[in-house]
Image 1 (cartoon, rainbow, N blue to C red):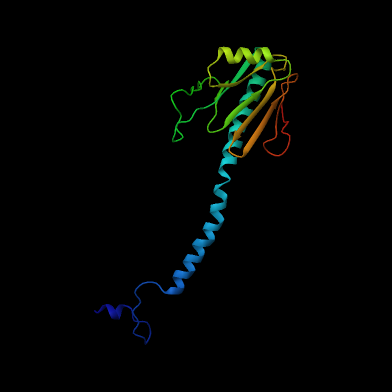
Image 2 (image 1 turned 180 degrees about the horizontal axis):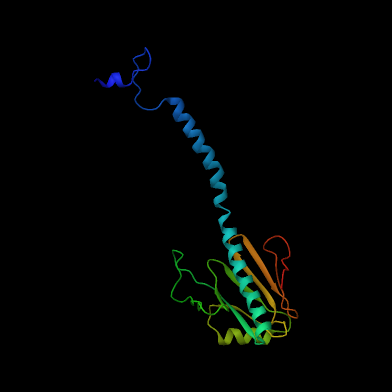
Length: 185
């Protein structure tokens, strides 16, 4: 049996080897449309990573506040400035958070900036004198519901997330999602 006979269709002796120009053009158009949809969304990644880190910080702060109220003890949340190597790897200087202690958090790619509540300059100086250079912020929650207060700003490239801890009530607010997030139990 000849290869030519395998490709016979009807009365025509037709051997098709490969793709037609029309098929190639259609595939290229489909690939172009997919690329047009995917490529612009790659730049959104930085904002998503920053939002995820801000959610982690908010979760740790809320957990510490609830624990302080329920257990009747002061709880401290320490935020560390993660240091990255040349290729984005964590260097040996970056502290590792203790897995059993939810009061420690290390940033990934984001720059952590902390502004203390008014009248708390002594605590700010004490933190910078006692802690390592990588400590960016320390917030204490008290059993009565209050806190040392302050404002935490996470920034990564052109994106910023602001987290505010109320000095008197200890409630956490953020404007990373475009609205005031005040859901506190």
